[in-house]
Length: 130
Ligand SMILES: [Zn+2]
Image 1 (tube, protein in one colour):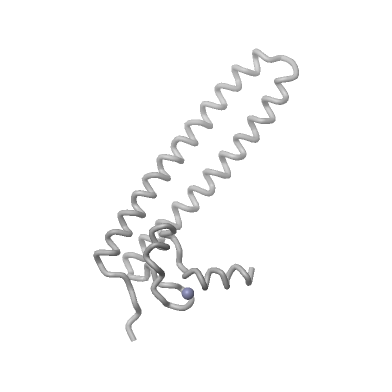
Image 2: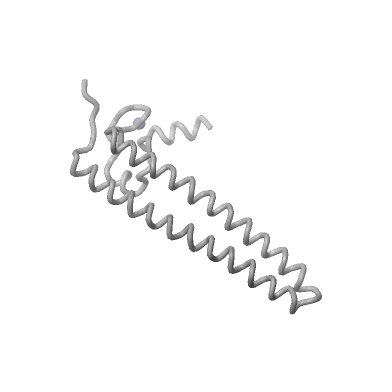
């Protein structure tokens, strides 16, 4: 029995969607990195001006901002890796096929979540097991 899969034309469409998302993420990552560099420089100047109370508060919120930026970078690069493996699944024809039950995952879901490897019912079951 041959596994169900999306047509070559559909695969091409998914590939375009994924590649567009990857470009978007690369842009996001670059702007986060730029912002982090700017924040560092900006606060060095600010710390010199504010000798008293704002100094501590400023330093605290700066490291909080940096922490948040790192988390964001982390999440974006993880997502990027997921999209890369989605492209691999397009190559080997596994894209859009649920890894648990083998049904073809609906097109709308694959457009919205191109890195999905499970259909919604299987994902829900999986979440209950966690
Ligand atoms: Zn499934």
